[in-house]
Image (cartoon, rainbow, N blue to C red; front, side):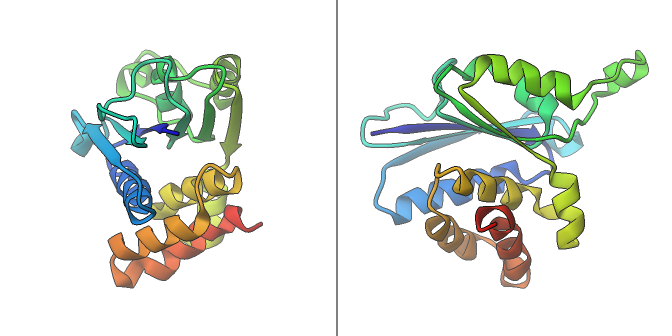
Length: 190
């Protein structure tokens, strides 16, 4: 059985690390993995989309539109921007955070996380909205939203917490391991 995952956010949020952790987790469990990133202007806060495909019957690293089993979105606006990957069988783990684009801000537009999450609920089979800002505040770091969302995905049974934790330990610098472990486990074990 294969699993196709879309991880989306903006530059600096940790989307690429989250993709590497999930990929490493699958490889360490003996699965074939193909992955790719479409990064664009990520260094300037631009969109980042990582594709992770797991399984023996996967032959391309890019997830076709409408074929994502899982979406992990670091902000609700990026989730909506990538809504075409979702289907009625998809599970979307989404931060309630909304990062408004410069053009929208200059035009005086504002985006409501509730509106965006409602749009996702119309397309996906299940949407889990996470208040990552609140959890980051409780943990004491704004830089661990990626692990919070991976933990939420583990809680939903999409990935095994132990596998993700082992992969994270291998990829995250030792100085930051305990903080990232705390973030990963915050929702996963509650």
